[in-house]
Amino acid sequence: MNKQITIMVVEDDTNINGLLKTVLEKEGYQVIQAFSGTEAELVLKMKQEVTLVLLDLMLPGVSGEEVLKSIREKGNIPVIVLTAKDSLDEKIGMLTQGADDYITKPFEIPEVLVRIQVQLRHMGRDMERNQIVYRNLMLDKSNYEVSIGKQKIPKFTKQEFAILELLASHPKRVFSKEEIFTYAWEEPYMGETKTLDVHISNIRKKIKIVTEEEYIETIWGIGYRIHT
Image (tube, helix red, strand yellow):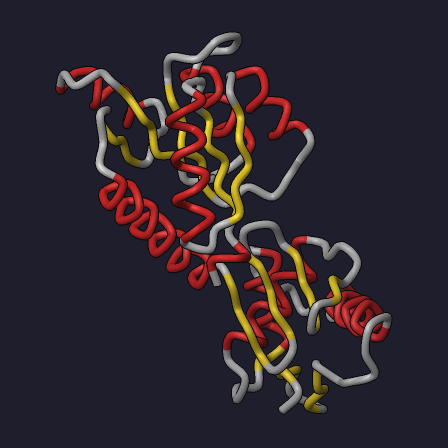
């Protein structure tokens, strides 16, 4: 599991950075090193897969605070701040600005590892809440992505995703067209079925690109359900 996790260490002290890299790799994590805020931002702009960031605040070039701001503008990667600042106001300030946790220097390695594990557990629970899995079908609610096995299906519209989300969340239930329309469009159903039928057809066509398996079943005279 750890080998799939990449931690970026942003620390200008080469000894501390090197120590963290050695320890984290020994634990099985992949490590990206950055020795300045500018270098850290470059890594983020290159869109490398970073799972968690250990971030020093006192950095040459771009400050740690600015790096934290950039990370928060792009998403919710867990950030643990490494800081020599130990006043309560400064710690509260870091958390308010978007840090998930902080470690005061000088620190003990076991503390760093435990705090990393805590953030990864939180992240895992968030991912579970954002994912719906049925057979080989997976829906990621955080970015509206749909995949079957390891193959991503071409971009779904908001309504197409909502339809599939509703059906996949309740695999044994048959939903009427009225129920599906109200859920996906978030407005009252007015009796017109063509729009919904076209969206169902589009979903089936997109799924067909990656598999011949059927995932939506028509229940004539009632509506639709996920194919069981």
